[in-house]
Image (tube, rainbow, N blue to C red):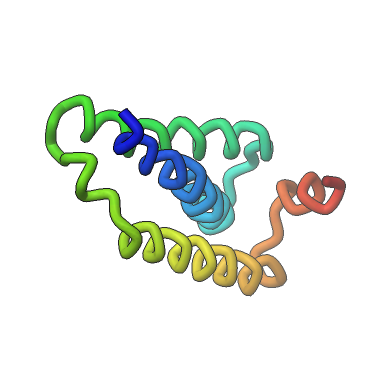
Length: 101
């Protein structure tokens, strides 16, 4: 049972990687969406991307090691950096909501 607790950091980091990806997509497509919608979608995407492969037996719990987790952390940092760089050139109403937080 404790062996399956290794996926908990994956849920957290996957949501942190999915959120800048969704924000970047909204920025490039000029979508007017609320921050709450993007956060909820990022969480649902993170849970589905881990729970579905585990439930369908496509991947074993042993596959969740430190290297893929590190890759997710690096991907989230790169995506957040790209989004911050594009914020000046492609502004969104979403940016005002994020500033107010």
